[in-house]
Image (cartoon, rainbow, N blue to C red; front, side):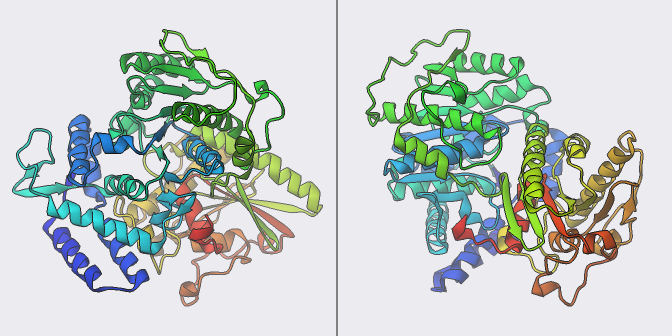
Length: 575
């Protein structure tokens, strides 16, 4: 929880009154997004939290629980969601997507909450696999907003309630509000099953106010968000294992020994009824279907989703196959492997038809193919590299013309760009472009506004990413090269762009639109807003502008992926 500044309190109240007067759907949606953006934690506050550390995560979770109760989201009501709760470092979104798609094949009404969004915020809350409409989003946003406003004094002075500092009440943060709203929407819409993806970690994540999920799942664990979760697999796994609940079954996948040991310990501490490892796909009877999500790593996610869905069906009385054996009821200190089973037709259809945008996706245009994957951890970038080499090679053999390969990359936060970029050295990339997660430097959608980092910080991160790539290309130690501090879009165009390493040419721009225009040798046109603001130098290399076919690998950040997909014409309601 965090306090709103007086300016933002004033801003939100005025936004609210405007929304009450607006009957236009698009305008009402924009007003809702503007008010939501007022809840973002700004860069200076985040810097202070990183400097001093997160001292009271449990208190903040209790405060969030108080907010949930203020809008009617008490424990017994949340039990009605029949939730599947999923955490992990990589693959949790895919496991959620597989699970939602399988259960939808049975005719259940599904609710699915995930993050981040690619194009518009409403993607995060889905009904029957579809993002909320603008009208639905605005309606439920203002209902939740009003309930919080109307009850803002009811828990003043209570222990563990929302903090009151200098007579100013705290408000939910951006992610917390969306989580409250997701719970509220799913209850109002009377979904049969809710699939909830954890934001960060698990133990103190605000989705963890779910006290009685039907089943929990923990995907592959690796190194990410280490400034919050810790710098060892054991520390990270302690947070992930915190979603286990008394008397409820949980599943995971093969993990490093350190991570698995901690997960088992946490499951015992939290009195989970069981923690089982999902079996390999090859052990299931019959032929496992071709998966709707590309990449060998999705096999791990698919078997986890299959186990989760069978358990959900069994626990809710909807499993009809005559293969039931008693669920493991006593969690031993060592892990057991879940049993493979004959997949019902609904599982085949769900696994095969599942679509999760921005993950291992190929978009083809005349003369250009975009290989899009939001990988942003060391392990997921290794998987991305393997996938890209395979599918780009297949395309090259199929079209039989010379191929030019270009990287479009960004990473954010405190992630180590040298570690993330290292696997990509094996992709045969001839050019590389770097940019912040800003689609268009002249027009910014409210859905894409980010107050959590400054523009100059984003530009400097872009330069650091570019510098790391050059150092890796030249075989230099990290931070061997220096570059000037970048404070504006103009200076980034003058800070050593077009660096030649002898093998790969690198450039950096102030937005995705300029980078994409350059990476495709001009094939991807600039948006209309940029026609009066041409990209800064350098111009296209001749070998790029005259290339017969270009393969652009877009990776490192889901926000980058969303910006690219938007510029390529993706529509929210098709995601």
